[in-house]
Image 1 (cartoon, rainbow over the protein chains, first blue to last red):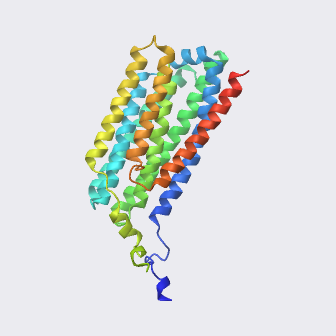
Image 2: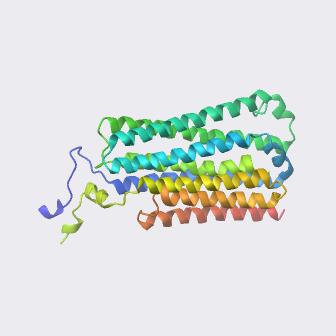
Image 3: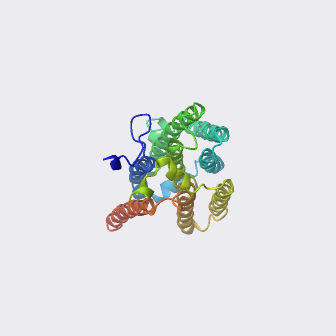
Length: 209
Length: 106
């Protein structure tokens, strides 16, 4: 019967299966994609019903800030991908540094988003405010979707930042190493998903004039 | 008989491909270039209105494929992930097309 003990149990007392963890993460990402996908379909329908209003409203958004945030997210996607390379090569210190750069990028993204939102709210464009209520129906739909979709995306940035923080903590503690870095990989996958969604949000709200 | 299957996850991971820093950097360079193109078309090509909607989504899709293929490691992972992604994409595109047909025929 010793033949059945072909695999070795880790000391933690439960099986660790890196491939299964990654599969689990991908399945979760698919649910996320369909969550945002549904919102993109709502956007598509309302845009096709109110093309002129969406066009007018989209001029209210600042292309420079949107482009800046796009670059910030793309760079952060590279740094987290590189931190996986670093941990695979056994360089925990570099891995942590790259994760911290990713966290800084996430913070910069949120700060820019804060200024964008507060300028819109200052103008009264947030759903429920005075100017919002007086807008033609198509334009108010644009701003409703803008706040809802970028808000949901920003929530994902915050969650991603927390996960990356946990990875930094565990790497520092030595719980993540070149032998065992599934959490770093999964955090990377999640972070790339956040980037992917922004890649579509950016042209749909800021660029399609 | 099962000698070569008796590898622990650690051993398996060590055999996996490690993407170089250089490849990650090239991926970023490509993504930034695509961003510059899409912004330039939007800002300077204002008279190409309908074209710009199409190109913006096309470029975004190219960017997403680059991120998934290189950063998300689909290039080096087992092909099951690529297939699953394709199935989800087909599912989403079907929803989109069916919804469009419904609204275009009103």
